[in-house]
Length: 383
Ligand SMILES: *Cc1c(COP(=O)(O)O)cnc(C)c1O
Image 1 (cartoon, rainbow, N blue to C red):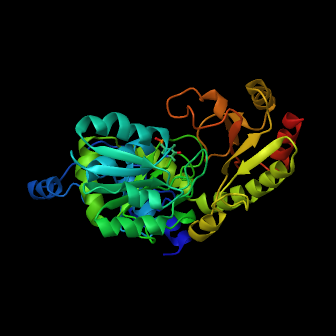
Image 2 (cartoon, rainbow, N blue to C red):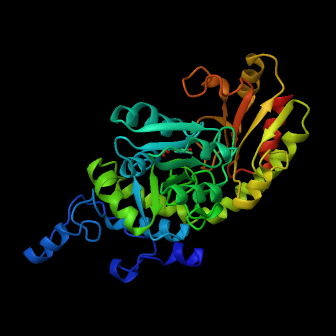
Image 3 (cartoon, protein in one colour):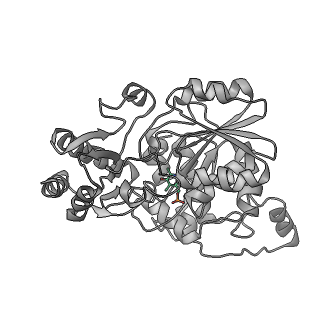
């Protein structure tokens, strides 16, 4: 379906809400029925009929349908955070005694889901260097039930060959999940490449205004129905109707924002690559990326998030540079209006980053400000 049609029309029935052009915000926890028969129908059909907002809320429902359509999938669910979405999807697919293969250095809280939570319940895991596909094959065990990837991951931007991972999973009868937050479903067509479930932090590009925390899981009707009863209703990490409404609002401009962000990022990267104080830039769509070919093959868009390594002897030089920036705010996350930097030295002693990130790597997000404004800021701080 046409992207504009999805964003403008899909699941929207304006005549039912006074002709309002914005989708309705149904801020209600509960729904009443005019007969016992209707009430009973809803109790047995919670995914289809609004009974209680931990199940189907009409505003959230519109969001789910649009998310699924944008990804070319059958169905989707929305959660109160990306982390809730990841946890719900993974937990719904594995049981004690199962084994998960995951590429090394996924999103910090996804890593902890495996190492700190699922390990307690007898689920095994192996982390592999996913840049070499052979490592996935070598990690397969008779009880491997799930391959979890994040391509690219969000500090060092390593890719996995999605089609090869899908083929391997099919061969061993395992499911596949990809965290597609970096590219969005528009920038990387994972469902079409055969992935079973896409998970997203909607907090980032979809909501797009740094004012909501939300997550999504996208896939087949069958898998989504399974996650609805276990991962969503039982664990209960739901989104509020108001936040769903904000994500819907943000999503309407997603294609326009993506285009602008890519244009700006390209200019900023060009500037950084040529600067004598910059050792290298790590960005999937830059020719210097070791997996540039694969990136061009499986990604349609590389977005505003990248890292660069500053030529520095000491951490103090990195700190001085970061403290000088004004346009770029010092912060985690990405995907909103404002450009951000996250120097690894802020978190380098933490469990997830120790021994992995060098002290002089700086993650950078280019938002919607002009390229000239951002480049001027980097230039004065580098000097
Ligand atoms: C932010 C993020 C998450 C977690 O999403 P929240 O909405 O913050 O819970 C998961 N994966 C990736 C790649 C992220 O960047």
